Structure formats: structure tokens, C-alpha cells
Length: 451
Image 1: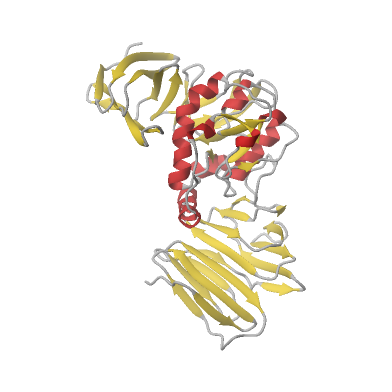
Image 2 (image 1 turned 120 degrees about the vertical axis):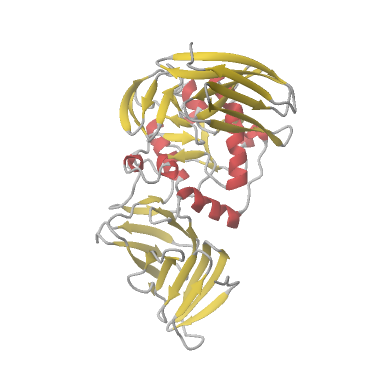
């Protein structure tokens, strides 16, 4: 295996510029015109990818470890009168996401034709293509032909894109992050911001006709390479709950943080640091977190905050359905635990967000001067709480051990904590801990648990 720095490959009617940016990401540029030299087939290899290019410029990409075809062009890309056409084969089980924020309630895009100014396409085949050249884009995703995905770019003088291989969505975003680099944020970015203080790395979302359309747009954006969407709450004055569950929000008129947003602040700040460290989106759409679940691919009206919290916004009345992915999920309002891989009906109001905690995880919530640690057994769990004033993490761990439940806090600062352990059926046990900075506080609760 070898890693190319940059290659210029002659074609019969132009040339291709090719560069491996990482072992899983390459940049390809295609131009048309006189050939600069004799064309010949090329096979370019990295640790993770094999890229084959014919003398006419037809591209095939394979996974190096398995030989699986990730992407195959049905014919070489062509340019006629300033318009570029790319025709790629697409097997029937391939699904697509991305292509920018839009109010579409349908999340997966196979069978659709989409015009977009955000030509970032995520495929369940294990890759994403981020088109970079100027032009007006239209994607035909197996609509006119069931086994072809076509891209039409009007007004383009060249073809240029980045190819990121994962194969999982999280790994794809990590590869993209290696190329784009980290954002720089301030801890105050998770506050309710005045419009003038929206950070430069954030993408301001266009106004949507209603709150449901906004949620759909946010989920599509997060699968389109937008890691930090920002929402103007002046457009959606629906509820305090709505203001709490979007990581970056602002409004033109000053307003104090809603109570639930204050509670979620340490959690949101931890995941804003994850955006900086790993390049993940602040909102985790269900296919990002559960890429193999077919039902999860259909839901644009719910998402995860981080890995722990499933968010089901009420945006049309006080009732809705919620799909719960695999695992067990505890409703934070009632403490009742539900099995995953099912759809349930919930009722709510305008003041309390509908949040489900994934069992086997810990959720830190600020309760005044106390940090509440919500834990849903039975699986072991940990959370690395980002302490922005220390530029370091406090660690909390929980899990069954022999005949007791072990709860552990390694805090970077003096702080009052309270463990809140969910037992199911609405029952909890609580235990307060006064932790000293640099200490290691361990609590052993005997089993079986009693409320």
C-alpha cells in the first residue's frame, strides 16, 4: 500500500487531479479539454481504499480490506455546454441522506429528485461525497432509473469532490473532520445568544413555515455535513421546551435561558467539545447513531442529543408517536422504561421537553449548585463531563458489580452531586455525594435495589 501526495492523470479528453488526503479520504478533480499525454488505466491505493480510473475517466472505488465496491460509475462523467452529468450505479439496498436542510418529513432520499445548494451526499454503502465545484446541483437518486444515482451540475467548468470512507456515519464524519479541522468555540455559545453573538462556525437555519418543518430541516442538515446549526427562536415562539432541545439558539431580543436549557447546559457544553474534538454534528439523527436500523432511516421528526438522549419535539399539538431504537429507553418525565425497536404514543405540554434516556448511560443535569447524575441501569455507563474552566474532564461511572451497584465520581472541582438511579416503573433511588476536586468518590448500593 502507498499514499499518493498528488497525481495528475491524463485522460482521453482532459485530465484528473487525484490526491489521498487521508487513507480514507481522497480529492478528485476532473477537467475537460485536450489530453496532456497518453491515457492509461490507473489503480491508486491507500490502506483503506482502492481507486480505479479508466483512460476515459470512469471511476470505481473499492474497500481495500474486503474488495467491496463502494462506488462505481456507470459511464465516465461528461460535460456538454457547461453542464456536467455523473451516472453512478446504485444497488437496490443503498439508501441516501443529506443534500442540505429542507422541511421534508421523509428522511431517506432514495427514489427522490432533489435540487440543492448543499451537495453533500451520505450513502449507506459506507461513504459520503462532498461536491466542491460551483454549479447548480440536481440529484436523481434512483428515481428515473432504479439502479442508477445521477448528479447533474449546471453551469460548471470542472468536477471536484471529496470522497470520505467510514464505513459508519460516525467514521465518515471523523474523516471529514481530519480534512476540515476543528472549530473554536466559547462556553457561552450554548447560552441563549443575541443575534450578534452567533458564532462564525455555526450555520444559521432558514426560517421554516412551522416548528415541525424546522425539526425536519435540522435533521437533514445534520446528515449534510452541518455540525452546528443555529436557530432564530423569534421565528418559533412555541414553547420553553422547544428552546431547550436545540444546541445553538439565538434571538434578536434578549431573554433569559429557559429552565430546561439551564439544566442541559453542562451536557450541551460537553457535546460542543465533541464537535471540536471529533467533528460530529451536535444533533445526532437516528441513522447517524443507528445506521443499520431500517425504521430509524425514516424519522426526520426526532433525533439524539449526543449518544444518551432521544429527543421527540412536540411541534403539532400535544401528542405524537416516537420510534425508540434498539435498547431500553427511560422517559425522564415519568421514569418509566420502554423497550426499543417499537413505536409508542406520548403526550406532552409546551414547557417540558420529551426526553428518553438510553439505558446504560448517564445524563448530567445542572440543578442549581448540584450536578444531578441520572443513570438508567442495568448496563454499565460512563460520562466524561467537560469542565471548560479547567480545560479537562470530570469522569463519572456506574454499573452493577457482584451484589451491589457501584457509582463512582472523579471530579476535577469541588461540587455537590446527586445520583438519581432509575429502577423502572417510575421508581428511583437518590444518593448525594460531596466531591472534592481531584478526589475519587465511590458509592456501593446493595442489590436488589429498593426505592
